[in-house]
Image (cartoon, rainbow, N blue to C red; front, side, top):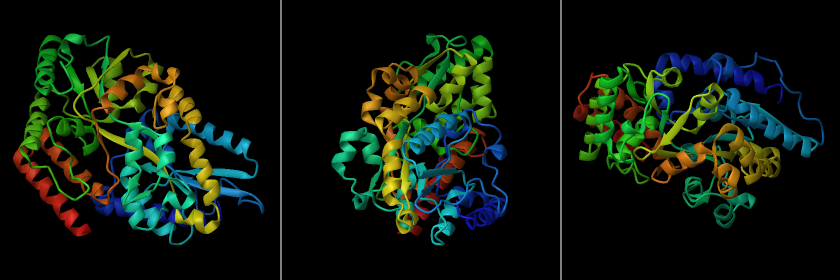
Length: 442
């Protein structure tokens, strides 16, 4: 990495901390809650993302004749170890290419300053809901200009992944994994008698939660979206009640429809037999310790559960948001003459061969069709279980309007769950907030 980049990133990170302290909601208005994948087995956040000191270099500048690729990402913890190994293998197979994996603290703000200055990454690893925003800001380039066409996408990746990387008539990224959440039951704690009859049986799940608490004194379901601003994790509730999306690609908002109000009422009702506080760490610990019967989570959590020996079963519930993790190429890569190598790297990383290896280790769901259909991968309980849930999911849109939904929906869900607002009032407020945000973009 060039010597002038570290001081710039340090300044950006300091600025990000100040901005976060002064106006935290603004930073999340345009970004989906980040999964979950980066939280699965990670150390405390400060250890995972501590920025390098100004002037400090973790890697020397590329020598003449070598190609130095900078990749900004959001992987961390044990989940990252296998990913790092995959990139190290690429370096071994391509002498002269080095790949610098960096975790910026505030990706949106950092990109918007670093890329115009020519000091941004060559590749961005991010969720597909960021595609439209990054394309409009001129931070990423359409891959059609680099030779990627629809035939390649359709012959290589699963349909939901193909859909999720195209926007405004162009292809903007290659997909690595598909994500969605389902109920993960600790089978030592909860029996099938308490499972919902099917994925649309919300009345049955509420009844089961009530019975489970009466029978055992324990909580049936833990979901981090119940009491933290996380529209992603409560999406199966809203979509499962018939809400088509929070906001569609045309900017239409569906947050105070009868279906949305019914979903909001369910959140209020389930709070009576659930934990007062729900978070990733709380749900993880409570499931492992037997304090809750089910954790509403995604494939990123499975590797940790298997390490601790928790016996589990995956039960589809509602209609989850289907997120697509992607790799995008920046305008800086083009300006540096690195685009061809960057493209080769993202094709390598999203390939069936690499994604099969990562799926077997990290229990992720590959976007590459050949990896997804590989017998070893298909035999993984996590892949088959979450795969069944994703089949009924709602693909996350790459539209810029996606950025308008996260904070209003997350806040509404929390206020309903904790009793500080009634369902109708909370959803009316969320509707108005997203409509205003969409209007501001138009």
